[in-house]
Amino acid sequence: MMAIKDQIEIIDSYIESDVFSLDPEEFLDQIADHGAELNGYYEHERLKKIIRKIGMPNAMVTTVFYFWNDQLIHVNYKQRQYMERRNEEGNIVMDYSNAFTKYESKHFFDKGKEIDKEVMGQAVTNIEPEDTFVTYSLRMKSLLDDKFKNRGTYDALQGKWVNVQFPDEHMIFEETIRFNFRDGKFLKRLKVKIKDDIMYCSSPKDKYVYRYKIESLNSHELVVKDMQDASSSLVLYKKME
Image (cartoon, rainbow, N blue to C red; front, side, top):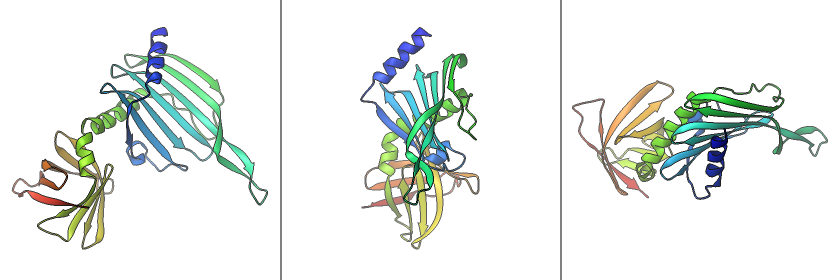
C-alpha cells in the first residue's frame, strides 16, 4: 500500500504531461446530461493518469485512474452533488457551477486485482456507485495509447479534403470523427481509428467498419486505398485551407 501511495504522489507531481482526449461517444454509451470529458496524461511516453468527468442530472461524477508500468494501481471515484440556488423567479434550481463531494471511494490494485478499498459518504440519489474498473480502464488506455502513438497522423488529417477524381466529394476530419459530403450535402458521420497506417472508419448505425490503407500523407495530399475492394485503385485527396 505504501508503495502505491508513493507512486500516486509521483504521478500527481507531473506538471508538463502530454494530454490526449477521447470524444464522449468513445467512452459513453449515451450522451451525458451536463457534458462529459476524458483526458489521458502521458509522461515519458507512457500513460500515467486518466481523468474522466461525467455530468449527471444531479451530480458531477469524477473518476481518476492511475497507472504504473502500464498497470492500473489506483482509482479515485467521486460523486459531487450539485448545490441548489434560487433563480430570478425565486424557484430552487441546481447550480451546476458549484458542487460538494457526497460520496467517494478509493480503490487500490495489484496485478489487476483489487487489494484494498476505502469508502466515504453516501451515494447521490439515483446514481449507483461504480466498483469495477480494471476492464474499463484498460479499454480506455488502449484507445488513448492509439491516439498517442498515431498523434502525428491524426494531426495531419484534421481539416477538409477533396477527392481529386470526383471533386463533388469531400470529407472533413474533426478530432477522431470523419464527415463525408457529396454535392455539398452531408452523407455520413464515421468514427476514425488509426493503427499501423490503416484507417478504420465505423458507423454506429450500420455497424460496419470501413478500412483504408494510408499510402501517403502530408500537409497537402492524402492517398488511400480501399481495403474492402482488392481491385480498387488509389484515391488522391487534396487538402483545402
